[in-house]
Image (cartoon, rainbow, N blue to C red; front, side, top):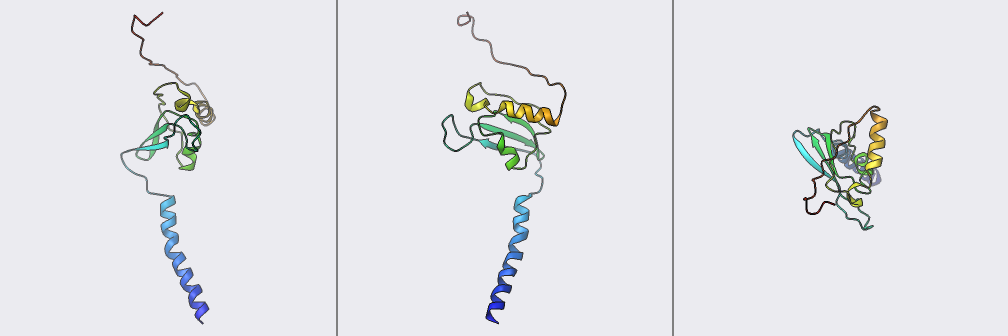
Length: 131
């Protein structure tokens, strides 16, 4: 009889934990703006993704800021879809900030085939530095 009580109490504990697990895996859609760090590592192989951030508006990813190595895998791990990304600004063209850009472009092209507009707004060097 004691074994049955132990088993039943174990099942009761699991039923109490299961709803909390479901809630943690599928949180309610937040309102407003939030910033998700896809990676905060540097150029060294430290086991962390390099620099990359995603800005969400009302729970929808709208902006990807930098896409360093390893950041491409993070949105799917976090169940964030890149379907609605509007803009991808790069702070600068170092490898730890842009290595995964080809993967994002390819995935985006598969999701939404068609033309894209690429622009560059790099500041011009001062006249005394230009060749």
